[in-house]
Length: 119
Image (cartoon, rainbow, N blue to C red; front, side):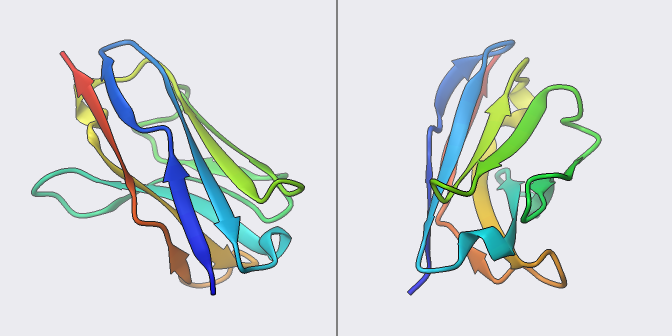
């Protein structure tokens, strides 16, 4: 059974930093591209960042480019999202997700972790 569990959410002031981590189990982690998504109250879920299954390629939403960094450790079955220069508009529940070889849809999702940025 596949499990994705996010850690590291919390409350931070504008301009602060948080690091989210996502621990994966029950899948061959190195064969899955990993993504981060977020959903703010009253809004649809949106893409934040993704890293290829090798870790050699990353993509970002324009809204977080230059502030967020996604990385992965295939030895530890973990994907990280370093978030710097946080803004109130970054407030959302953040989810990690797994996409087999980066093709098509995301197959597995975590339950999310809340990030709140105070102004």
